[in-house]
Length: 362
Ligand code: NAD
Ligand code: IPM
Ligand code: MN
Image 1 (cartoon, rainbow, N blue to C red):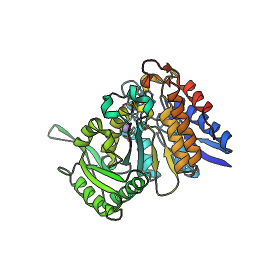
Image 2 (image 1 turned 60 degrees about the vertical axis):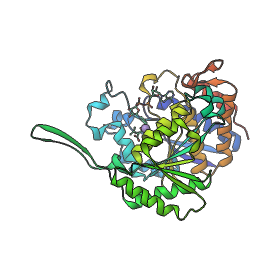
Image 3 (image 1 turned 90 degrees about the horizontal axis):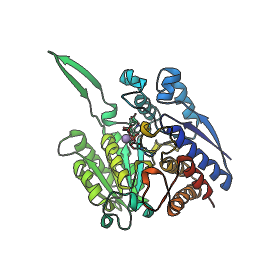
Image 4 (image 1 turned 45 degrees about the vertical axis):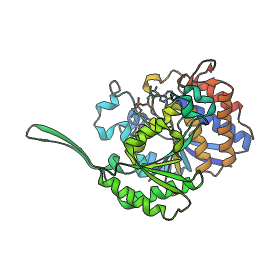
C-alpha cells in the first residue's frame, strides 16, 4: 500500500523540518506496513529561484494528483532576501495564499495542546496550566482580508492603502459547520470569535454561526470579541475547546495559542477542503534566524504529518503512534532549544527526528 504525498520542503528551516517528518512517516510505514510515494513540489522562495514566480500551474496540478501535501514553511527575511525586491504579488507569501485558494483549503485546523511534560516551557503561571489544556483553532483560510481587493492610491499628494475585508454567508456557513462537526467529536463547545461590535463582516459571521448552531443542539456556542479572546487565551486557556474564527483573527490567535503551549515549533496544522485532500504544515514560519543550523523544532511538522494520516488517509492508529512517540520523547526529557528547560537534554533537529522514530510502535 503506497500513499501518494506531495512534499513542499519550502524555505528557511522548511527543508530541515520536513526531512524529519518524512523520516517519521517512513518509520511509521515500516511498522504499520505502508510506504510513501513522495513527489517534490516547489512553492515560495524555492519556486522563485527556479521559475521566477512563487507558484506555478505545474505545482498546482501535481498537488491535485496527490492524496495529500506535506509542507515546511515558505518565506525569507524581508530585509535581506532578494525575494522581497519583487512586487508583492510575486513574493513567497503570495504563492502560499494562491495554493490555498487554488485547492480550496478553506478550513485550517490548528490544535494547541499543552503537554504535561512541557509545562516548564510555558510562560503562564502553574495554577493556570494545572491539568494542561487542549484547544483547536478553526481558522477560515480562503476569505477575508487576505483575499479582498488591495490597492494603493495617491490623491493630492496623500498616499492611501486599501485592503478589503469581505465574507459571504456561504463562506461562513461552511467553516462554521466544520467547526461544529469537530466540536461534536471533542468537548462539544464552540467559541466563535469576531469583532461584531465594529465590523459588518463580523455581524454576518455571528448571525450565520447562530443559524448553523441550531443544527447542533448538543454543542454549546458562545461568542467572544477578538480582543477579549486574545486576553482570555493567556488568562484561562482551559475554557476553550474549538475556537472558530475568520482568517486574520485566526492567524494572530494561533500564534498566541502556540506560545502558551511552549513554542510555535509545537503547533501543527491541517488545511482542508470538502474532500479527503489536505495540506499539512507547521503553523509557524520559515524562521530565517535559525535556518541551516539544525536547531529548529521539527515536532509541529511531525504532528502535522500525523494529522495527515488521520484526516487524509483515515489511519488513526498510525497517527496515534506518532503522537504517542512525541509524548514519549518529551517524557524522556529530550528538547530542542525553543522548548528547553532546566534538567532536560538539548538535542538537534535531526536528533529529535531520530528519537521520535525510535519510539514509533504498534
Ligand atoms: P517565524 O514563525 O518564522 O519565526 C518567529 C520566531 O519563532 C523566530 O524567532 C523563529 O526562530 C521561531 N521559530 C519558528 N519556528 C520555529 C521552530 N520550528 N523551532 C524553533 N523556533 C522556531 O515568523 P517570522 O519571523 O515572522 O516569519 C519568517 C518568514 O516566515 C516570513 O517570510 C513569513 O512570511 C514566513 N511565514 C511563513 C509561514 C508559512 O509558510 N506557513 C507561516 C508564518 C510565517
Ligand atoms: C500562516 C502564515 C501565513 C498566513 C503567511 C505566511 C501568509 O503566517 O500560515 O499562519 O498569514 O496565513
Ligand atoms: Mn501565521
